[in-house]
Image (cartoon, rainbow, N blue to C red; front, side, top):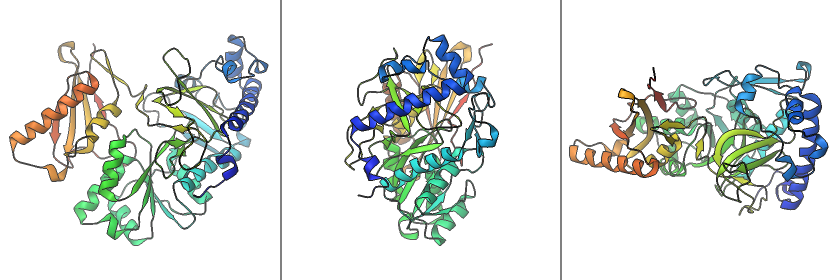
Length: 433
């Protein structure tokens, strides 16, 4: 079993938490002294850095939210002057003002180190060549994965998004062993390979993949691996943290969150800590960020965290699958619906492909939800009875999971729009005027 830093990666939990508390106190002091926003928040709560002497006391610190980042656009939350910065990334801003995040050189080094540890943990080395499907530029995915791979000495093909036929040609012509991108785009790659008669198992050397940037389920992973023969590893991150940061090891049982860089809390609806492995709201504190620190940032993800030692020997906590996001949540007839729930149902049926789209309308003030799902190529049939049966089975399963009646429309393969980056799964046509 390969390690990048075995001493750190296998450190006992007690020592790791002692280190976390020390780094946490230091970060709180830094923010208190250098950030007017955080200083005012602490003062309003009647707290000083000296009060933070335990994890329990730390839970009294007010949480940061996405709206805080947007309200302080573009750079009011920076705690370093521009002459100390080496990079700035900006989110898409599709749900409001964009988020601007800054980095010092140490921030970039730490980000690369987080990914490098994860890459080694799932089997990458300097002998590998990574083809990076993620976009380069303001989006953090491309550059994050790029520098992480170079950090371990791997060769990187910075191809970026788009031009799928060229992507496949490069995978055939060059000794590419690892690919990285969104899971939906990887499925699209698999579809195009099949249409071109390209066998990823025989015609390429690709054996590993890093998938992230959008929610996806365990059943989707199984489908992708069965179709391609590639072992796919989940990646967790967000631009507010660094970017893509935490990867699964070769055991594929949760993303290893490096406790010397990040402190994560899982909280219930009352803001109390959840039990180990119990699902709740994820709250993140970065422990060594210089330019854009995050203290108790409620990121909006619903997930779980366990400190149980991994079979790989690593002792750092592991993050479970993201089962929902508060900012992706849809309220339909008073019921909370997450696209990830629909995706998980789709993954249960072999006759369905991973490509789907949700359409919301509200004729006569009554919400209606239609889920368009492409059929798998091998499941195409002219038998209307069989099509009706597949539709009925899918609708029944969605009703079981969502507690909501939905209309399913089965689509021909290739009908729905493909996305080279993050997929957009929802069209909300509801009008409340």
